[in-house]
Length: 120
Image (cartoon, rainbow, N blue to C red; front, side, top):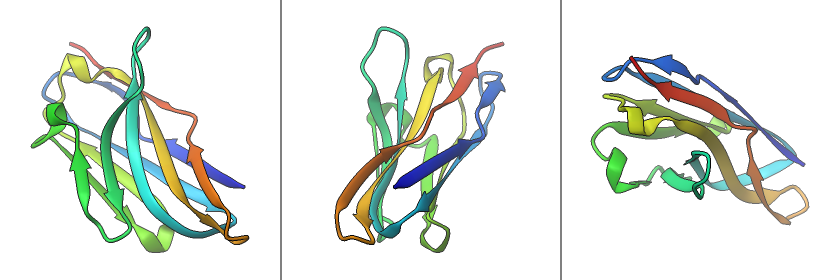
């Protein structure tokens, strides 16, 4: 089994910054894609940013130029640096990881979520 532990959420004023971290642990052979999603009440979960094992990132349009995703493959950890935060970034942020376990079976795991609130 693969477990994802997120940290770094909180309350920040508009224009401020936060850094989210997510560490994966368990019977992991390889993680192909790691990413961050977010969800607000009454809406579908949306992709915020993804990063491949090779370090290629992709972002949803609303965060381009403000958020940066990165990962440390040795630590099975993904980060999301969020700058110039806006009230509309307020959501529960979820970490996701897709890969292979030691048994060569694929997995897709989610973290428990961390609240990000942007408000003055």
